[in-house]
Length: 220
Image 1 (cartoon, rainbow, N blue to C red):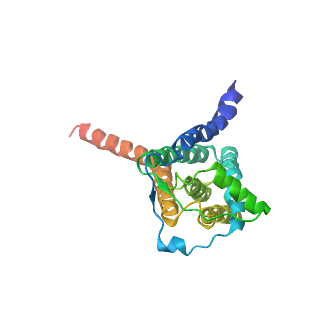
Image 2 (image 1 turned 135 degrees about the vertical axis):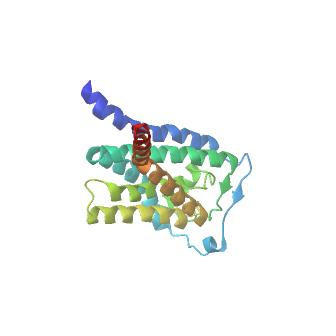
Image 3 (image 1 turned 90 degrees about the horizontal axis):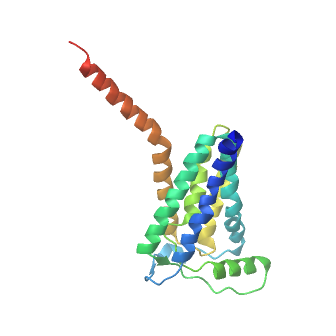
């Protein structure tokens, strides 16, 4: 029973991600109207089908990194997972009230990468774009690895390369625009830093208040 509580149940918390994803499917439409945030800069970003590789790698990357944190830094695991789940909820609220869409290029050809992109386009409607959850989650891993107990320069470099390639992939396969990516990075920064430092800040504030009250209560 103790093993179940200390290992299995915390690990199962990752199921919150696919469970929350059901709301993504419900909101993935333009029924409430959809705006375009495309800029002239986006129009100059080329479509490069090879970037579908890091885009699809995202699924393995996110769960792989969370599992890594679970094994080597349990506290960081909880903080990163909490940042991600709260971020997903915030994104879904934004999608409901501020739905955006991204124009997609016509897909021609029958190569392996082309067919994967065609499948992604079919399975995922061009909505739920701002902020990008792909970017949000990838950037959270980029931030989190810097605080991991087992971090090394090589591991930080590898995670950064993977994370930023995934972020760039959202632009090069035309799943998102630049503003979607910036919003995902900003949201990730705010959430992770707030959650990571919340307990130390709370302890500091509590101890400071306790010391002040104790000093005021001392006889003079």
